[in-house]
Image (cartoon, rainbow, N blue to C red; front, side, top):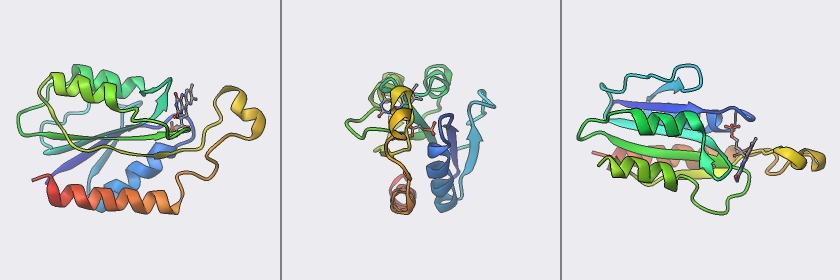
Length: 151
Ligand SMILES: Cc1cc2nc3c(=O)[nH]c(=O)nc-3n(C[C@H](O)[C@H](O)[C@H](O)COP(=O)(O)O)c2cc1C
């Protein structure tokens, strides 16, 4: 299954670590959406969209890609996020954007990511050291499961 993971990781590179772990497990190709917004996904069967969370939503590069890209029937998408506070599923809005376009979206993955947004910097940030080795192992496991179930 030919897989691409498109990510935006602008705060501390947290999501990039997760995306790299998944890409290795899936032999996927990685694209940085903040550098290349117009990735041609026509040749891929499985597409991961990944980012940190900003004001309870995925990064604008991911939102834009989800809104503007035409997915072909049969392509499947999975969503990945890292967030300071793991309080809810912040991928919901992007999921809805895709599902409204009849795109099949698989279960998403999330974990905490080091966060020094605003006043949090005064306390040295939250979720220090995240994603950690355990998060990255969980990411690999999630990716391996995707590879075996997303046919
Ligand atoms: C401007 C800004 C807004 C953020 N908003 C949220 C938020 O609403 N909820 C949350 O859990 N984390 C929030 N965060 C924390 C990031 O989602 C978290 O640090 C994430 O791991 C960053 O990923 P990255 O390093 O890959 O960009 C915010 C961070 C910044 C800088």
